[in-house]
Amino acid sequence: MINTHFIISSLLILLLVIFNFQFTNTIRLNKILKLLLIINFLTFNIYLIYERLFDFNIHLPLHLCYLTEWGIFLSILFKNKYFYPLLALNALGGGITGFTNSNLTNDSLIIEHVHLYLSHFNLLLFSMIVYKDNLIITKTDLIKSIFLNAMIFFSIFYFNHINKSNYWFTHYRPEGQNLTQILPDWPYYLLCLIVIGLTSFLITYKLFQQPIKGR
Image (cartoon, one colour):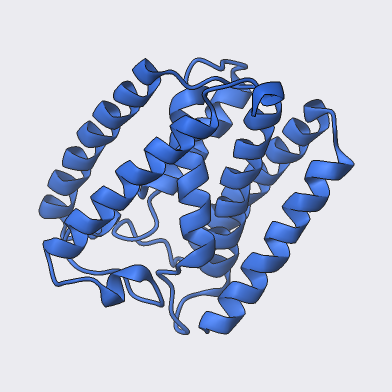
């Protein structure tokens, strides 16, 4: 399972590299991203609903990466780049995390695997696009992002408590092959994930501080 995950992730990263050199104009990349987002949302949700497999405790887009993906889609749909810096701070680290970790098992549905790969591919594609477009992330953007994510985290924590769900893995470790398997038990693994997330924000912030010519 873990080997398959890394093989698929590596192939998708190779595709991103090809996109990077093939498309110098981000207008086409944005069109591709928009199309992939629509395909991902429609196929995942329509299939689960049609097959009566949709479970509100696991299939709502409440994990950070999926919330970020929806934020990207709405920003593109309404042609509003106001939240791009905040979305980029989530997207780069989230995309890398999704390609190096999996919370799915052999019992997970094929559509769930497709959704995981395509969602994190979309996050990295968005990161590549805004990087090529010389997006600048300021210290204010970084602080806003940390504050906003903290608010969402506590909201999700409360949601999980009420609904006995495990979005953001606040109650127990995610299944599958992932970093939490080598981390201490709850709540320490959760604290470790928060530290990793903050570190990811800082690295992304540094990458997006200067225009591309100065990088």
